[in-house]
Image (cartoon, rainbow, N blue to C red):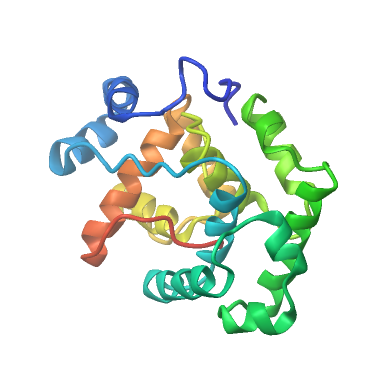
Length: 224
């Protein structure tokens, strides 16, 4: 992971930041320059940092985008507001009515409990270097590397966050580089080294490439 500070001068907060980092990336990688020439600037893909942003990432994990969007709307309908206190007090029936699976119920409860007991402090995480922020997130039961990486990228704007376990990134990178098989998370970690310190920008371009391949909106997919 990058050592860029959250909310610092190198974070990607707005289109201008993305454009600046994109120019640096395409200047160092012909493959990314080709994608940029074909696709233009990829979507910014930012969400507010904090509890609801992390919950949104968890809800969208490991299911199709259409299903995830429908379940997110159900979740908002059941709970009204997405706060640690509301989710911590919710019953299994509430979560099931919102369409949440048993593993996701456990994860969402663990995140809510960690916020309420102070062991997960989103303000503090936002001030950490990327490696430390990642480590703090994955200490919460149910938060895996993919979830932490996507939070760093989309909620904190870290320019070098790299969700190596994302199958859309894997498929897009395999196609871009002409690989015989889709690279797994370990292979993606190695492939991503060529795009440091702009891996989050490379991820955005690869998601846009995957969207073109699949004919739909650019989004992260799921864990491997």
